[in-house]
Image 1 (cartoon, rainbow over the protein chains, first blue to last red):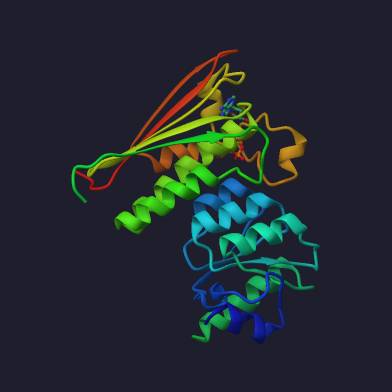
Image 2 (image 1 turned 45 degrees about the vertical axis):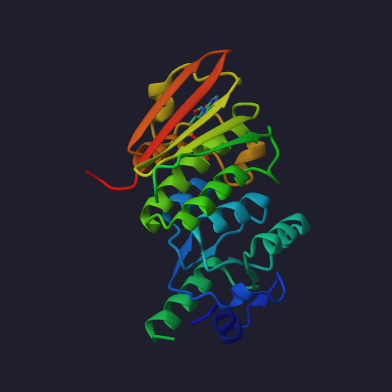
Length: 114
Length: 144
Ligand SMILES: Nc1ncnc2c1ncn2[C@@H]1O[C@H](COP(=O)(O)OP(=O)(O)OP(=O)(O)O)[C@@H](O)[C@H]1O
Ligand SMILES: [Mg+2]
């Protein structure tokens, strides 16, 4: 399942616009708001769910090779973050759903082998 | 890869989160181009990013020096910040003096130094109060 397919399936908004990394394959999901936990635990291909929208999220997502970042509860994403994300090819998705709800959705899509 | 040693130097600006992680990101790119195994790249990225971000947050900025040869990558992150008074305490998971301003960004779990320890093959920290901190990280490409 690509990031684009995941976003379409659950109605997540694509905050970073069109970019080739929408074709990234999503192979897992990880949720944590502590950056050094995320740094150590986000696996390549994970969708990372976090409430943080600062510049460091881009650095961590890029260094861990996350498939995308998903921001819950319609939290507004800082403009500088979106700009850096586009520059680094990191996809940000956004939704009104909670982090737990997002994890459930991504996991069930993966379990169904999508 | 032949015996050529790749050397890189980076400036790590203080409190600049637009640039924090750039040195690690650049090194990651080099290792990827060299065809280094993904798990080795991952460990190097984790260890180097944690040292880099500590220099940004705690060390008033500093610099990174990187040497890559056919067997290993050596990374030295140095700053002339406040130093660490009790290194053994600082190494403990959960210990952090991070101010609220950086905790709000997601730092301050007190996990950085233990991440460095876990993900490097050799970690050497030389620190002195009011002088600064030098973090030396070595990751081997092929485990003996
Ligand atoms: N370069 C440094 N200069 C001065 N103090 C440092 C430096 N690096 C670490 N420290 C001290 O060691 C503590 C622990 O560092 P560590 O990286 O483990 O956690 P943290 O940076 O506080 O939080 P986290 O890395 O989980 O976001 C810091 O809070 C700080 O007091
Ligand atoms: Mg740290």
